[in-house]
Amino acid sequence: MKKFAVLLLALSLVFSFAACAKTAPAEDTADVKGEGVMTYAEYDAAALESEVVVETYVQAKQSWWNDQATLYTQDKDGAYFIYNIACSEEDYAKLNVGTKIKVTGYKAEWAGEVEIIDGTFEILEGEYVAAPVDVTDKLASDELIKYQNQLVSFKGLTVEPSNDEGAAFLYNWDGSGAEGTDSDLYFKASVGGNTYTFVIEYYLCGADSDAYKAVQALKVGDKIDLEGFLYWYEGVQPHITAVTAAK
Image (tube, rainbow, N blue to C red):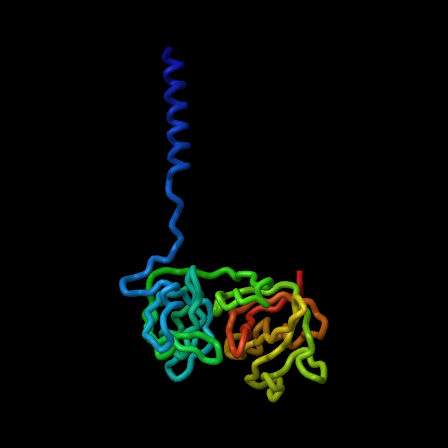
């Protein structure tokens, strides 16, 4: 009888633990915003030129100059392009990938790009690094705008001529730049029967970066995969941070 009772007790404990495992709430992975801070949905719905307050995470730094910084940032629900935010050189050095910041500024739009301008920020505790979202199948759809400024990827693209002379890329949008200067790189690639323009921003990925060198080595007809931030200028014009041969 003792053995039977012990066996019943053991079985009841097993089933109790199993029940707890099934009923325990899933871990909450949503961002918890501070008091007075907008969710991404609230920011997205805010009127242009209105003041906005967001908590977000640095994903890349584009530039610092004259105590102003330009940042690509994102939380778990959406992304925020921070343009020329007030920032000392000392604070700029503290902004690593994943750093959490609270930004107060004004929502603005320039040539289709929605951004936060005239802002200030403070560094908070917390870290988040976004994984790129594959938006290849959304390039030609109205859904693409929902991913504006996010870290994204494009798969299986074909390099197309960037001008009438058949160049695989251009230094600056009109070819006015040159190797060895602070020139952005512009190139075109197609997928699904449509051709799109992509950019290597010099101040984001300079001449020493793998992305810059990879574009300089492109040939028309190459099959490539891309990764970068879904920037907008008179339509989608992603700022690319990685270029690799298509898998």
